[in-house]
Image (tube, rainbow, N blue to C red; front, side, top):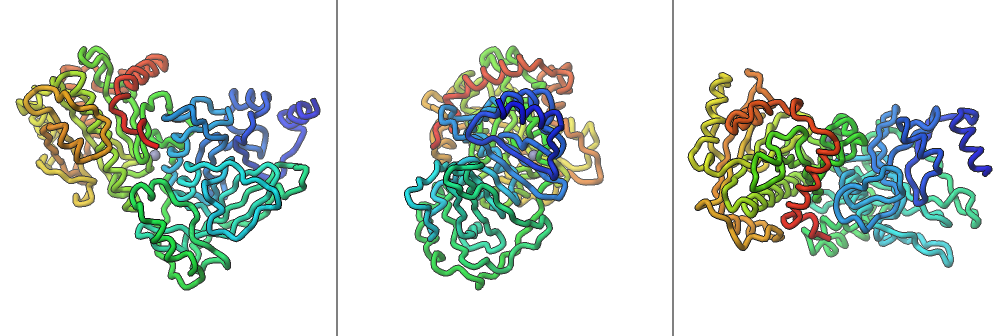
Length: 517
Ligand SMILES: [Zn+2]
């Protein structure tokens, strides 16, 4: 009752908050009055009091980048983002979505990262139990390398020695040192510290020496573990030699502009999450907004299947994703998604449908992605799809010509480009034994037995390239001129949801992200 009155005073503005204050979800539900307020307003509860959201990236007016992941892991949901923004549960998808933030000054999570206390000599108080820890929180911390990581522990305060992260070559990176601090609950009976004061300068230069007592990162990222089964050993090379004798690695610190406003950043709180159909480690799928093909375009499919394959990293091109390790794994996973989608088409249409996947890669872009669209395999076989792209480029008087070449993640291609893959199954028949969920890339390649061609059109500043080029070509070719502009094809939320759900159901058997972990 007393709490309710305090809340009312707060909401009425009778309690003044003296300085900007941010909060996220903890392990308990928010009071109903706050839920009501958040449902009808943006994230400001009252002047100077802001809700960070359950999973969010925030840049404060001082320039501090705060990433938060509130709530406890909801293991019931194996894929996707949590639906409810205000309940104290998150999914692994919520955590992975935040990897796209790339960096953070401050990371706030309700739960601890797994194995945070290893390599540490700081003891917990007598009889204290270590709080719940999550692997996905450890992965998030390893990816963002925040300067401070704050967490919670009901009846205990814990501050770990600072730790440094490793760079791609598994070398210590002294420019990224994290301090992990876990606060006890406000007014806890054991009188453990629940408040922590510190100063942080958003413009501070990266550290050149490590603070005393710094240890190697205790967080063996599961991602690294999958790729480098041997890393325990390579880590141990450093475990006794921290100090200031590591030369700092020069790192490019350029936080990308505005992931919070980005259409394709999962950390954007206003993202149309109901379009999301699968989330992997480095990329995710959504159904296209205002799709070119609808559920009646291809009766064999009975779903729109116009799909976007999007990297989690906020990056204008694949080439510019850093570190290189992430660039490579992102390209690989997007490729894997493309193959899985192709497997779905193959299985549903018995080879009658091929696919076209296109990408606009421009350094001036915002968040790169691929558009995937089913197309009758016959059109590809007869060379009509290829011709359609070439003719349209000529009609537009683009000075450059399409070249047939495979450019992988685009690193070898200098400058901006438009790329399209044309894929169909050899022999116009389905591939019966394809179950689509193999873990092995090479194996998948073999199994699909498709033919594929990659066409690349170099772009340059000398001509204005229409970003809707790919869609326009395909709309004309498929006789869908009326749907050329996606804005003319917008659907109701309910229809979008229905389409996403029916796609998910059809894709389930081919979605490798569901089988992991
Ligand atoms: Zn983005």
